[in-house]
Length: 289
Ligand SMILES: NC(=O)c1ccc[n+]([C@@H]2O[C@H](COP(=O)([O-])OP(=O)(O)OC[C@H]3O[C@@H](n4cnc5c(N)ncnc54)[C@H](OP(=O)(O)O)[C@@H]3O)[C@@H](O)[C@H]2O)c1
Image (cartoon, rainbow, N blue to C red; front, side, top):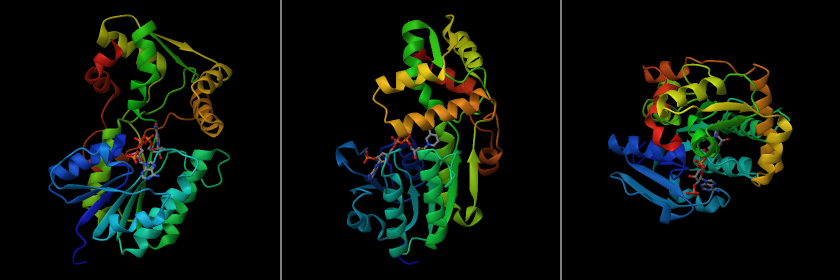
């Protein structure tokens, strides 16, 4: 294990990865932060940036030479299975002892939906690789609200979603980053576990609208839309068909009250409650005004 001192963080410029490298830096743990474009690098103590592309297997070896643990994530792309399996292969070659993979609450290698199936296939590949793994399966991120939802709240004081009055336990992605930090720094406790990461409460969009109303002091309302309308909107935004299909299926599950599940895994890992929706809305109030 001599020289195996680094944690290699893939997706270090992404939403979860950028939070994780800050936690590792504060703990003075040496990090290799990976990006395809070093212009995006954020300078932090104990963090060394390297350029590599998960599609280019040979570019990956230098990122894991002195590495004991890997944080594995990439965006949802058509190539995600090959990309992440390349990282797992090279981690095995380089003698990495532990990989923490961000998956999805919908992971299932038999799923007819692209993203759930892809995550399920990568999880199975990790198990078969011989490298010890820990899998994080998060539900929907609260931070997704800062995109389209925040913009219609700002411009029209309306929320448009196809989830009816169905609820979900949305997670603040900083709880995912903190869980990954704990697991990467205490690998033996979490080896070979798969964790379902949710927020602490289930909410629907009527409740979210009421919370935002309270915080910004102006009436915000939820307008349920049909799956057909949601599909048209996503097509207009240029989302690929495989991603639209997955997104609409998540919404359908929620509409049919099949997504209202709270897991205890975040409080068990972090030894504190998951962040709440109310705290999130207060913290990001300016984005909704
Ligand atoms: N959004 C949700 O509600 C949700 C819920 C559950 C699960 N998830 C899962 O969470 C994961 C993260 O999704 P996200 O959209 O939030 O990610 P993101 O923040 O956009 O981050 C993606 C990161 O992956 C890196 N990356 C992508 N392709 C790469 C490649 N070929 N080589 C090297 N690095 C690459 C990017 O780095 P560079 O661009 O700097 O190279 C970037 O830092 C996905 O697997 C998704 O399925 C999301």
